[in-house]
Image (tube, rainbow, N blue to C red; front, side):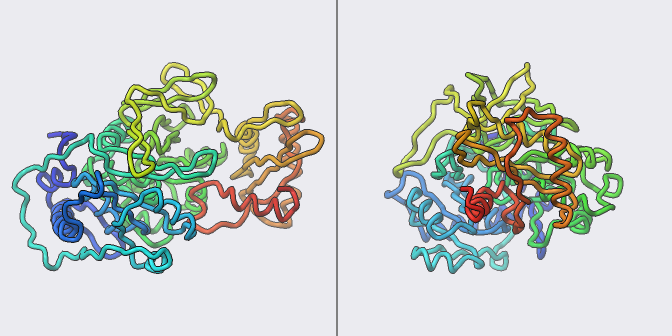
Length: 479
């Protein structure tokens, strides 16, 4: 029997697969039945603390925490109760957190142990909850639990070209159809193992949880570094990676398909070099490049072992004046602003901010509209230059930044990471790259300056480190 959209996904799995493992971290495992009972316990606790709220139309549960079983439980509880799960990046500065708290304007906040200091500085009260199983009587659920799939269930923040955070609201239906569409190219089944490698405040992390619960698969979490031994110990079958995570794994010679339980690698977040993808293919893995967005509840178009992005079911795309427009069953339902929803009509097309072309069901993404600039009267598409750089096998990452120039208006700076990042070899590698660009790019598209990719922490590798680039350019007097 297939899970129906108006059934609570956790309760459904607890009824049909009660003893299957739903969540596993570095210390413990929880079955679907245990997860269901924990949600019941948390619901009772929160009902006492919050009660019936007349003040808010929909309760917004703000969570400032790193990935954990506790955070996932609150995510799933919000779906069950029709509350808004509002995860914030705990690594944000105080001002960034306060900016988002002001938008959400909620008195209900949960903060994990690692981030208690954040709560103290921000001066707000936090909810105290008991997540233990000790006092819970595990009883088989008797019947299914009906939920409203069109009820808003989360707010995920994303930044537009202005840098000001936008609060994107989804309902459970958005995530349900996102998961169904993904299943067509990347099947996930009961008893398989999906590693949660992206944070829950990121739409990719949120979607991983929902997809796994709907499929009846086990979600794995870890505080340990992402290594081959970890993947082997946990028998991981599915994993989402950004380029830096993939690069680290490929440094291990035994990271090959025939010695691994991995069935699918979902790759996204930035461009992947030709050399990197060739290496993945040589090692026998099934890989999928993805184009997605917060507005569309994660994946929009996905490839299989090539760069041909096929539009997934339940998504609609059209091209207007070169820009990709989006709608469909996975598209978000509203913005949250001024303590209320700004609803988006379901038939309305939403601008992606990306340029591209569409050939039947295959999408080609050119780049971001807000990254394009003019140099000497010529239109510059940074992603085009980056793709040419990534054709060179020794280049693993490339990013173009514009800088002001008296003669041309703007010129280009290239930040580049090589596979063998030896400082003494950098100039030699740059000369090889320049030679490659001279053969493949017209003169006005070639960078004026070249800088090495900055050293980053694990948390900074999920997105392109634009602030780090700006800092370097300021130090060089170029920004």
